[in-house]
Structures are given as structure tokens and as C-alpha cells.
Length: 173
Image 1 (spheres, rainbow, N blue to C red):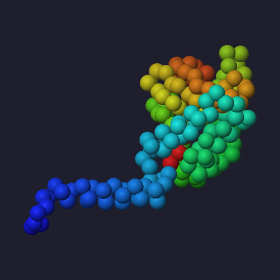
Image 2 (image 1 turned 90 degrees about the vertical axis):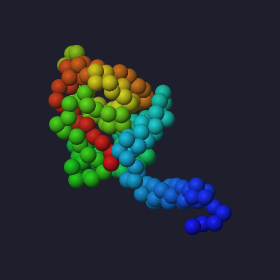
Image 3 (image 1 turned 135 degrees about the horizontal axis):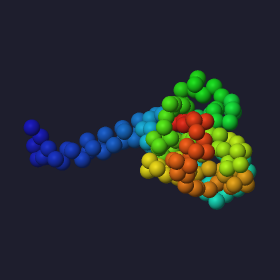
Image 4 (image 1 turned 45 degrees about the vertical axis):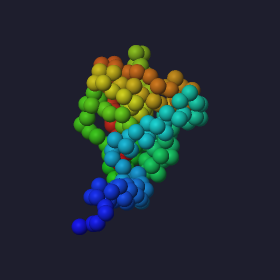
């Protein structure tokens, strides 16, 4: 076989080559070469950079900006209060429905019609930071009407009371 070299001394260079090939492949594939979990984490990481900042735009436009900034995926403009238009023809944005809100995952986006206690409906868009099945933590802009990015918790029960079925969940692919 190879004189003076063990099988193990050849493994390191082979592993280095494989790592370089994998890194180059990932760089070429870019956003679409990532797993869905990695893409979701990139969205959350980018969204978190705005925490506490007044971003000057409402929730839906802020989420569109975050997604475009991290992925170059351009989400179409509004169709109604809880749907993006022509999303069904956009292979990079997948609407998950029917989809119980308790299943929502980190990095997914929720669009909804939030009904206040007085009955006023507020359209809202939020990115999910976490969900344990009973409580979700969101990051969003304009929850308090001031275009500032914040996090807050919403129980699944309260969501179901305030929103009902007037929502959609999206995943950016």
C-alpha cells in the first residue's frame, strides 16, 4: 500500500478537501442551499438586529424588508389583511394551511386580523421567535402603533380568541 504513511495520516487532507467542497457548494447554492431550519434562523437573526429600533414602517412592510434583506426573496404586496398577493405563484414563499397556530415554528411568519376587546380589527404581521405549543414569542414592528420593533408573548388560547381562523402562516424557502 502506501509506504511510510498510515491510513490515518491520509484522512486529514481528505477531510479538508471535503470541507472545502462543501463550503464552496453552500456558497454557490446560497439561500436555497440552506435547510429550512437554517433559513428560519437567518430570518430571526436579521429581525433581531432591529429590536428596540423605530424602523419607520409598519409590521407587514418591515417583515418584507427583513426577508428581502436576508434572502433576496421578494414577497409580493398586500392582498388583504392577512395574505400576501400572488404568494401561491411564488415558489420561495409557502403558505402553510390549514395549519393550527400551535404548530408554528421559529422563523415562520404569521399574518392575521387581530380583534381587540372592543371589536376593532387590526391587521398584523409577526415573525415567530419561539413556540412551546401554548405560548408564542413574536418579534414584530408596530404592535404598539409606533413602528418600533419589539418582542412579546401571545398565548395560543388568546390568539385563538382574538384571531380565530383569520390568519395565514408562511415559510420563506
